Image (cartoon, rainbow, N blue to C red; front, side):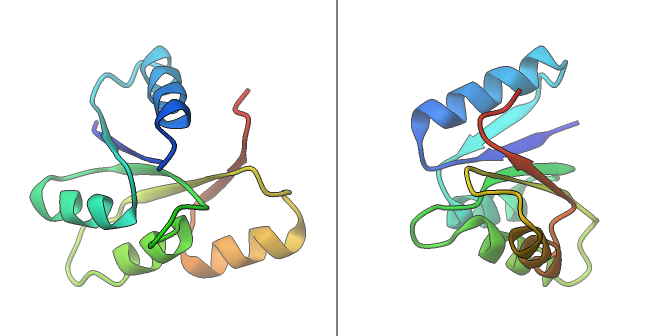
Length: 108
């Protein structure tokens, strides 16, 4: 199963990719932002996206909204990573954007 790792910070993206590979996911594709992620989704079937929330140009919520708006596409499970507090308001905002799961950095 291919997983798309989206984060503008190269160090954080590397940590994420290594964590996913340690969990047994060997097909991890890395991109720097939401625009690159959407372009990649047009070329390849991805089952899971793990995206940072805060990124320049297109943040994780905008990426999720645009991905969910794609017509006749297969369902993609979307996990949002953030350094923001996991309070009710942030979780509500993520759910309204179509996010399936919400994880707080640093990953444990």
